[in-house]
Image (cartoon, rainbow, N blue to C red; front, side, top):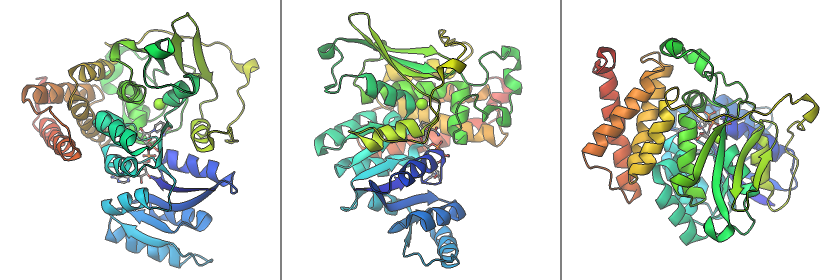
Length: 402
Ligand code: NAD
Ligand code: MG
């Protein structure tokens, strides 16, 4: 029996995780759920899974959740906690064997890092942890014997087709490169002159996957693939020049590994996150996920094409950040989080997202603030970039075309 804490249980990945967990009551029990501000959904999850703890953002949401739990027909003995330290507490408690890290954004970093420092098995959906603090996170996990199991569908696919004993050296296993597939998002064929008019409602509608708002926008700019390049660099210790991206609009091949003998191994499946989640949770066994079987008779074609940096400048910016190294990926991520939030509020254009990120990268590479080693350094840089990116958006420079 595995005892799990689920950070971000009310989000898209959190809900899919609980769906898989509910299919296997003999294998999993829930120690804690964390749902930030979505108290009604969290109360319903508490009713179903009866965790020892539920964590929300602050005192006001804690009061709301206690009231919602109190009004349930069956009495629930879940203790309600709040705040950032509570996230760390449920990620590191001695009773917990596995932690699903499914908070969105850099907000998920401190709890994921704490779980790594405590040697937990980490089911990692929160890719921003590796983008912001890849080196620190992997080293912490390694030193403390924490297993990192990738939930992100591409990385889970790669994980499945790498040799079982993969040691972190491509050469030692005869691996030529790692190939990340990308759907290309909703605007793969949109005329470039129409890009400035893309609305938030259009950008959050992904053609193949159902996901949270932020990652859906990231997919439409292909920043998501950029973040995933950085994620793969750290997870598999893969140098940037051996990371390939290929656009595959059908999202059936979830990623591939190219071997020295010319073989390419791929993992295929329907676009349903319960597949990689079940793969991670079930290891070393294969367990049912609830996902529909892949129906080959209905697959008209699987197509592939190279990515276009003019259409997707965010992908190029991620390669740049990877090449600069140090804190540059942290800058990329923080600026992107601010820009995506501003775009979703209707404050900036779709095409401004890349401009905000590009400006932030240039500004912070110049200022020499990219030497980052500790969590405190990274959080300080993250915070500074959020401020300067917000100032840049407020300043009107984007409208002036500067
Ligand atoms: P989501 O927006 O649907 O859910 C986010 C969860 O985090 C919610 O439970 C929310 O309450 C919580 N949360 C938000 N801000 C928080 C904060 N400041 N502190 C604590 N909790 C907070 O997001 P999602 O689509 O489920 O994505 C979660 C993570 O998984 C992201 O890092 C994303 O990139 C990654 N991921 C998602 C998918 C997918 O299919 N949705 C696929 C691969 C990777
Ligand atoms: Mg992915």
